[in-house]
Amino acid sequence: MRIFTAAMATETNTFSPIVIDKRAFEASLYAPPGTHPDTPTLCTAPITVGRRVCAARGWTLIEGTAAWADPAGLVARTTHEGLRDEILEQLRAALPVDGVMLGLHGAMVAQGCDDPEGDLLARIRTLVGPEVAIFAGLDPHSHLTAKRVAAADVLIAFKEFPHTDFVDRAEDLWRLLADRLEGRIAPVMSVFDCRMIDVFPTSRAPMRGFVDRMIAMERGPVLSLSVIHGFMAGDVPEMGTKVIAVTDGDPALGARIAADLGAELFANRGRHLMPALTPDQAVARARAAPTGPVVIADMWDNPGGGTAGDATVILHELIAQGVTGAVIGTIWDPIAVQLCFAAGEGAEIPLRFGAKSAPDTGAPVDARVRVLALNPTAEMRFGDSRVPFGPAARIGFAGVEVILNTVRAQGFDPSLFTAMGVDPMAARILVIKSTNHFHAAFAPIAKDILYCSAGKPYPNDPATTPYRHVRRDIWPICPDPFCDQP
Image 1 (spheres, one colour):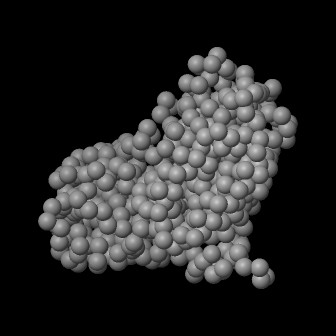
Image 2 (image 1 turned 60 degrees about the vertical axis):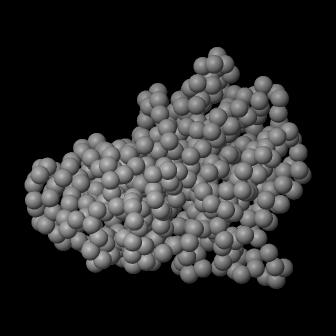
Image 3 (image 1 turned 30 degrees about the horizontal axis):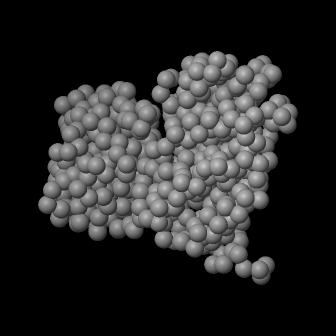
């Protein structure tokens, strides 16, 4: 068997002013054929798992380019088309192939193209013909378009949020691809549109039990079940929550299961997201805790959702309440980092940092700071992945420490702090910029976890977000999208 594999992935916040160009991919991951590292990124696990699977079976794996950029705004047209055409040319050179395995995110939006993944899949289908198996992995915070479903044989999304299972889902993809190529199954996809916009953390009820039951249902003719959560910061026509059921040649069964699961999600709409505190409430509660560390999640200034990650709202509140022993990880400010590197470790300098990217991110901080640590290649762990966030600087002032970073990344793991010389267990308060991906790694060490809604750098209320392209017959824009009235 000859299998072609490649990855083209990023998550586009269409409200973000930060345009993604080729340099953004190069800063995160741009790996031409054969140069992908042994460890996967979030969306490239199909490549690293594929190496192992194909080696064990004696199959030929032809690797194309793998590209991942940390989430931001629209992808530049030349960057999108350049990466797309690069992969298509590599596939054309590899023909004939028996299968195509792709690592995608699913929420990419480019200048002039609302559906880059659908465009890529459709072009691949045209190249390889109707008989070649096309499988792809997706992030659940994506947009499941009709074009993608028509072009692919199997689409599987991560089940967990935080996405701790991205390698597991890649293994599912390869297992089903092997069964398909060796004639044991004839997979078909069925999709149910839940007509809703919501957030579905699987670290808490009701989504925790829902995912556990979904996994238990994957047996016999039910090959795979996925929930596409949707990505509320993507203003595209087909945004929203959907359920995918992959069955062994039984689309009617798949349709029934997808509809039942989708109806359950819709019945719980608005109950999935974790409760959030205001900045003054979160800081006061963390400050009152008898022991630390208490984790405050700045949930809407999340670079993993396409924001800059430079909001200072919680930092200003810490200062206002006179908190000491807090460490902020991170505030994105490449200029401030450059100034800290020029001054050197141990230097004391006047510094203005933060709140440069957009409204509703607070005000820049002006302080005389000490440069406590510098790391030109700072990175943190995320499961089997390594996530760069450096060059980075750690500064201290007024009893508070702040990690300033150059490469935007949300807080996934306590190694964010240890990479900069901080013992997270010794801190009273740890502030991280993440909606929920941090939870799996921080829950074992945190005395308490507080979710804080601080400002609106991210469009977090779909009922009032000024969408231009999102359909109107979707909850909460429409109170009852399943009513029969127009």
